[in-house]
Amino acid sequence: MLKLFHAWGSCSLASLIALEEAGAAYEVALMDTKVGDQRKPEYLAVNPKSRVPALVTERGVLTETPAILAWIAQTWPAARLAPLDDPFAFAQCQAFNSYLCATVHVAHAHKHRGYRWAVTEAAFADMTAKVAENETACFGLIDSEMLQGPWVLGEAYSICDAYLFTIAGWLEGDGVDIRQFPKVAAHFDRVAARPAVRKVLA
Amino acid sequence: MLKLFHAWGSCSLASLIALEEAGAAYEVALMDTKVGDQRKPEYLAVNPKSRVPALVTERGVLTETPAILAWIAQTWPAARLAPLDDPFAFAQCQAFNSYLCATVHVAHAHKHRGYRWAVTEAAFADMTAKVAENETACFGLIDSEMLQGPWVLGEAYSICDAYLFTIAGWLEGDGVDIRQFPKVAAHFDRVAARPAVRKVLA
Image 1 (cartoon, rainbow over the protein chains, first blue to last red):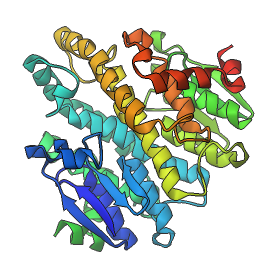
Image 2 (cartoon, rainbow over the protein chains, first blue to last red):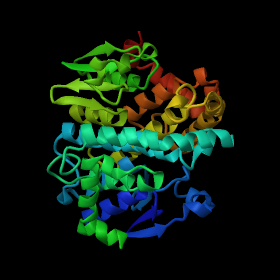
Image 3 (cartoon, helix red, strand yellow):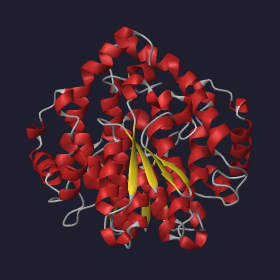
């Protein structure tokens, strides 16, 4: 059976939602990154990058949210979680996920994880202070340019929706009012109401 | 015809190499990010994210290197630039590209683009000083855990190779000796010797 290494509050929620939406059989290995589970030798043996998520499959371990999400969509095609038959539409799906991964998630990470990129407390404080501004810019762009509605890619729900829901869920804790972004806010509520999402959050 | 917005020294080289390897018909729109071409209104109309690469196709604009690379592989399947028929192998390909995009490229960006995440000169200097250490850690992991050899995914050349070559090409300028990573160094020379790569770099 699939095993997802998942930490609440982390981006692994997107993979958890996608597995549930796909109807996959999986178990969850809960990680507590606040106490450093991701740095323990037994986890480094699973994912030497020391991050969540990691998905253990019968073929081996998969990491990186955009890769895991696309794999879930391809492995359970009947769940229609990505536009698999149209390379251009699939690329748009992937571009959205890549933006979340490499720009929006990275913007958020500077709040508490400045030690990844600097060493002084003053630099950490500087980074932390800019997070809300950066997230506001990112979500402004998502709201105005990317989110087609009702779902990210338009009429069809996809892996992008689980991922956007996950990252938009960080806004409140980062001091950014989601109501500035009306399409994102409505999308957040729409995803939250899905049975699969209610189940994994229960 | 496809048009790739490309800046020398940027990650758009990976897409340029992949287009050439695919045998695609394309033209290049050269951007100079040092003078701010990416912030001009005419480019923001193409890519409101204000970054390269952007690939203009007959269906619309694609952005984000991992998405563009996978689209090229899927659109020219005869070039065999990704393991398209095996979702697990494709996910490994995508996970590698996602790591380059969201971790390794981001580590590099802190050298000159600290203003994205902070405002003080002291923080920029702090970030810049840590770049070589972070890149050394990333490439150490690529060398020991990820690069299967002779190509990233093993026996078959793929989009991952163009992308790794592109990012490894930044190491020298960042003060990191590629010879610390013997597999990466040999891989760099192997990619550099490919006819498609020699052609686009000529």
